[in-house]
Image (cartoon, rainbow, N blue to C red; front, side, top):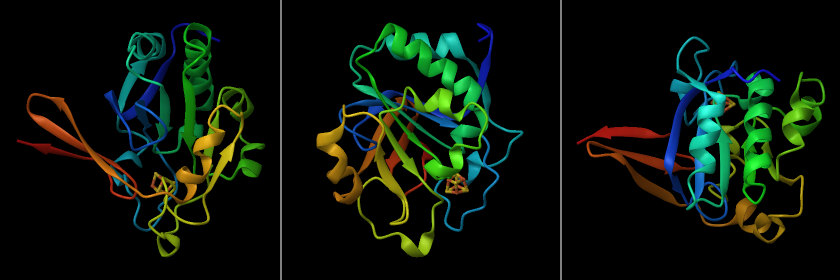
Length: 197
Ligand code: SF4
């Protein structure tokens, strides 16, 4: 893999959140999604030509140098549109901080991912995959999945004790101060919003 690659992101949460998986988790939201799910929680992440390019090695360094976090959660957008770049990011994390767990949201089902280029390169580093399109009518307000058709799938055993609460537990919203002038709300099903104070 190239050492000079970028990944295009909608947003990041460097401070970490407790509401998108176990422990304190760094979050990256990838940019670009071809679906137009009704009630999408991050419609701003859909356009393919928006977002910000992040150097993958610099982003990986920022994540591994955060000694407060327990893992990384990747959401979107559709993360697997940039599967090759995401695989490189996760490879770097695994090499440097193998104890960090990785969770990834995707609109594809796990079965559909078998046809997506480089998806298996990503999945080898993923502990929990939350798969399937968001269907607003199936939003049952449970867990950290958006709707009941989505599955919380363990691809390793490292987060097994949290699987039930991730699938059916109580949803929470967290407000994170990103800097001195803005607060971001994070959680499911609400979209991330930046409020200027
Ligand atoms: S898959 Fe996710 S990001 Fe894409 S349109 Fe649906 S809810 Fe929005």
